Image 1 (cartoon, rainbow, N blue to C red):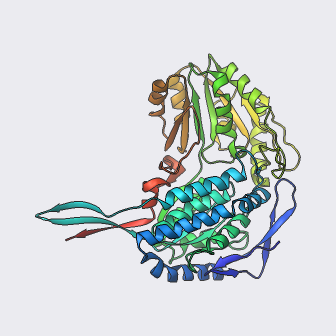
Image 2: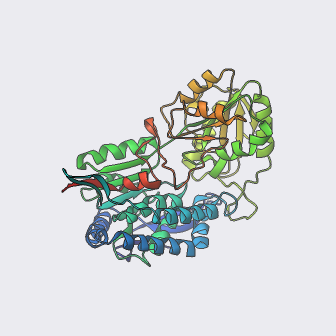
Image 3: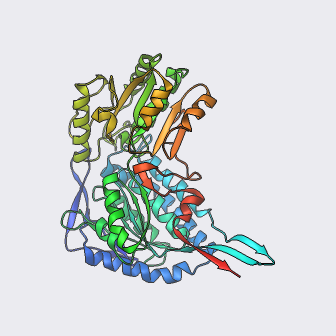
Length: 467
């Protein structure tokens, strides 16, 4: 099936298309337009033209439009979930594509209800000073392949809510759901307010062109640290505003008073949600020596019962790794870890792009599976004997997206949590982001935040009015 882009509210194509492959079967599930500079320029031009009237709408009108977009996404939730499963590989069931699209609807709805009213800084005999939030213009959104619909909504809805217009570029590995998402949005939006361009990034890199484009005022990017750094460099010449949510190598610390049986399920899903292909998944687990073996045993026992298979099968709870490059990275890291530690579960690649949930003990900081972000279904478990040591090891990373502490003593857990160098930290869970709480990384994991009022404000400039 051939999918089309949407530019200026109309279907748009290019001279050529590229194939999108189902990672579970290797079969083509659709074709997307292979666009270049001309199509990008056209999309930016119509978005810029639409900005004049869109940004002039009242706050109430913008809110009503976002509510209509949210309703449209919910109306097409089943269709979008199926496209996500076919191109991304995650199951329809469990914490899969239906859950992703449901989360996108929830985020859209919450964002719709936010507002950034004028803030009065001073009002006295010396005068009145007001802080106003002004929309930026055209926002460029660059999204990854792991949560194609959810992350597109994270980028697009706050831009719309604050009076900006959008050009979104999805990953060439998962463009189909975003093409359909934008088509659906355009059923209730004025032409040019949300546009989408796609390309395979081989002959022409759309993301790099967006980052350097003089008429795009902001880039919001979710993806790898290496690509995020390139976005930042190419955006410098035009002084673009940036929100960069980049890689994480999140650590979890299990304190000695934790109950291994009670935390096993939470540990598993903290690490293996979306097959580990999640920026804020737990990538390293530090467990106190006194309960190390018990935690490993409980974690393995839980993981053994998770069905892995084609995402279109309702019985599947985890699917394949999304693409060959990521599969090869996971396979390389696990093969190396096999020679350094003990594989407690999994460890051997399956057929095609399937890789079983893998748990490896006996590793330490300095080993590649511990130091590198695997972004896949493999979890290293590292033994420690002193909590101070665990904190030091957890912070021994250039990344700082998320972290977690697991304990029966909440106060003790909070004390440790406050010393972790990361943007978000959870107690007895991991990666449980919420639309009412800002989310972003420290160190090399990003710039700026998403979600809640703080995230909404990142789509605006400040103007101070003195009267």
